[in-house]
Length: 120
Image 1 (spheres, rainbow, N blue to C red):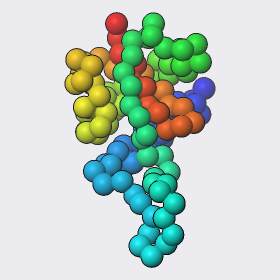
Image 2 (cartoon, rainbow, N blue to C red):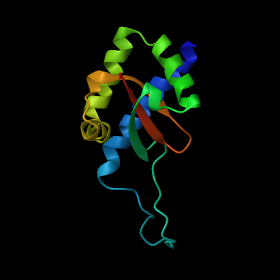
Image 3 (spheres, one colour):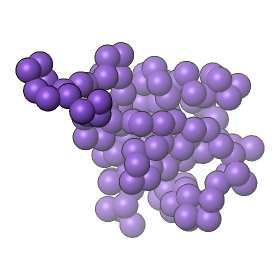
């Protein structure tokens, strides 16, 4: 279970690193044939959504439950700090009408979508 938690926070840090560079998307290098596809960095956040626990899908609920059960107060503070320092994550929360202090978990999927789970 500790490995899952470590992987989750590693993904948060990757998401933070990817979100920092979101001001300008990566594109095909100059001189290469462009097929209209925009490349992106590994771990870059594609989309961010905010949801209460009840709004999550079953797989997301399972992942969120595991994270909540294994996250200590210090780790939760660190996660919230990373969220507050990541403009894209902070903006999604503000748009939802919430703040980093209400986030209780963060889920990721294979398409680099981040879901911030807030207390209801």
